[in-house]
Amino acid sequence: TADVTDDDDVAALVETTVAELGSLDVLVNNAGFNPDDALGGPADVGSDAVDTVLDVNLRGAFRTVRAAGPHLVDAGGCVVNVASVAGVVGLPRQHPYVASKHGLVGLTKSAALDWAPDVRVNAVAPGYVATDLTETLQENERLRQSILDRTPLDRFAEPIEIAGPVAFLASDAASFVTGETLAADGGWTAR
Image (cartoon, rainbow, N blue to C red):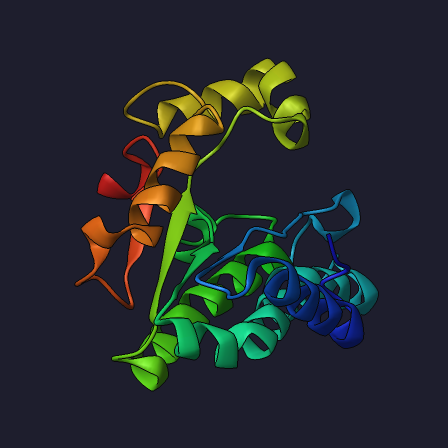
């Protein structure tokens, strides 16, 4: 593991991985969070909270892409960024998170253009997933129902249901796919 907010830590992780495995074929950027102090209207969220969310969710992915890039080019590898439904739509009271995930979708598209044809770069945009991070949402009946009302499949995803699309985009089955963001959101963005 590495602290994605630290350039040296990320670079060391990449070099250790290459030393142990011999190459780096797939990079999955999955670090992300949305802390309570980053929730609220645009005038309610302090600069420190914005910086923290952007540093983990967007700059962290940029750091890993930058550190892994030469190895991925050598291997003809791929990148899968775990964005969010918040990267393709707006969500109220989550401005730093939404901005960071929109940025990650943009990074996906730009890196796909820059690294083609050597490296494929795609993203998965999960909807709400049943994890410890969404436990509060799942336990609050009003919030839970609000989410389910906007999710045609009428439930939170299980983590394995996000792992499948990530594995697909990292596989040879997606060898002609780059610059795309695959929604795994129970139909949220179909509306």
